[in-house]
Each structure stands twice: as C-alpha cells, then as structure tokens.
Image (cartoon, rainbow, N blue to C red; front, side):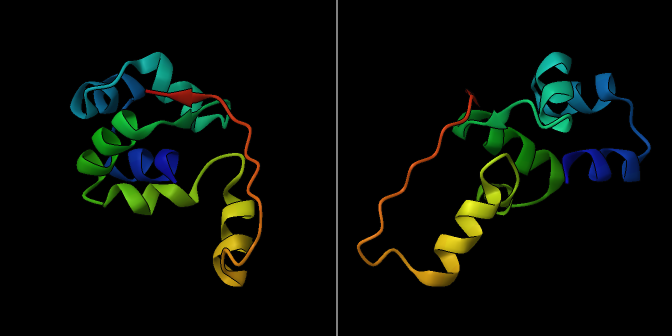
Length: 87
C-alpha cells in the first residue's frame, strides 16, 4: 500500500520519507514488509498519504489476522500478534 502510493506519486524513497517525516530506512523496511508502523509512524504516513491512521491498520504482517477478527468480532477471542513496531 505504501509502496504503491509512493510510486503513484512518482517519488523516490528519500523524497517520500522526507515528506512523511520518517527515515528512508524505516520507509524501506515498511515497503518490504519487514516492519509494521507503530502509532507515531502510522500517523505520519497517513498524513502524507491523505489517509487516516486506521486505514494503515490493514497493512503489515498480521493484517490478515486483523481482517479475520474484524469479520468475526472480538467475542471472547484472544488476540496474539507478534510483530516489530516502528515508533
């Protein structure tokens, strides 16, 4: 999602990272799926992409798990998510 958006704008990683207020290294890891954005980074990315931080909730290594929980609801289910978060 972030990669597609950046490429759609015709920006390099360096340009988009600068515009977003995050490091190019963090951006690269996000685009490669190695890192899931924590709250602070997610807010910065969302602002740069003209989205809400919740829109970015649906990306990352455990996005499918979140989609499944969202479809079924939280009724009595335990959530276990393990991922590295960038803050």
